[in-house]
Image (cartoon, rainbow, N blue to C red; front, side):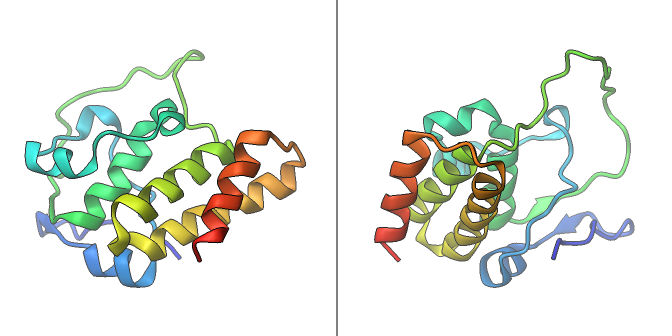
Length: 146
């Protein structure tokens, strides 16, 4: 179950309880050009694990919403040119596994969302049927600490 978009008439958003206690994921985050952060928040999040650096926006957005309140400004301040060479999030399981393990170890309060991200990666991993040694090792590490 996903979080709904914030109400248009309110600018402060706070989904911390929904994310940390109910493991809801917020899929409507703005693109990178629409994100700004306080340094103190970034210091809690960074550095990211190496595989997650392939699509850091998703990881940073999920963690930021789980750790702090946000401010939603409902007016366009930038534009995005969409073309055939835009980078897009790859749904590779190694990214989900790495993000989940990193979250579980670095921010134990986000254990539920880490478990959800891990299970989504595991589902994709099993469905795709493409097994790699790095993913297998992360799965073993993750499951050994449950």
